[in-house]
Amino acid sequence: MATCAKCGASLIEGSAFCSVCGSPVTAAGNQDQTTKAGLTSNVAATLSYVLGLITGIIFLAVEPYKRDPFVRFHAFQSVFFSIVVMIFWILWSNFVWLTFLSSGFLLAIFSAIGGLIGLAIFCYWLFLMYKAYNKERYRIPIIGEFAEKQASREPVQGR
Image: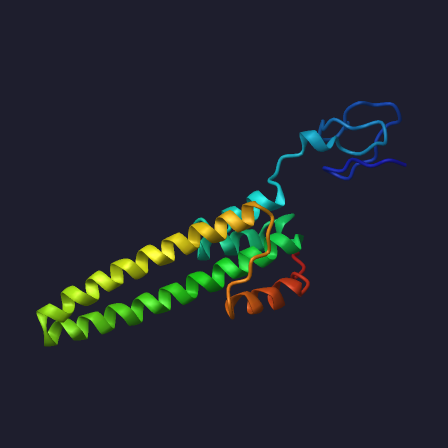
């Protein structure tokens, strides 16, 4: 017997809609794929980079994206990249602050260098989103290996 792909209820033969949830069904008895709400894998992978740590974790927790290997890889890579960038900026700002205490000239130099590093990180972040949108599994050196290992693991089953 055919079941609704959305709610799992049994379908009456010949019906065009599920009697429980009202979803349209195809002749085979499955929910029409054009009516399913959701993102394609490449869009979900791209969005996992938008807010880094936050959206990466969201896509690792939300169905059906947490089961998609492509989205999982980019979500893990986004999380790891965000953590590395945050640690770097904490260390860099402490270094610049210590430099400021010793000399005003060095502060100006290190502030300019920090601005260039920030711009480079921003451009790399845009590059990662571009690669994800183009359905490429671009691996960041070192971080990408950890993301690949984590993405290959089976997600934890929810209740």
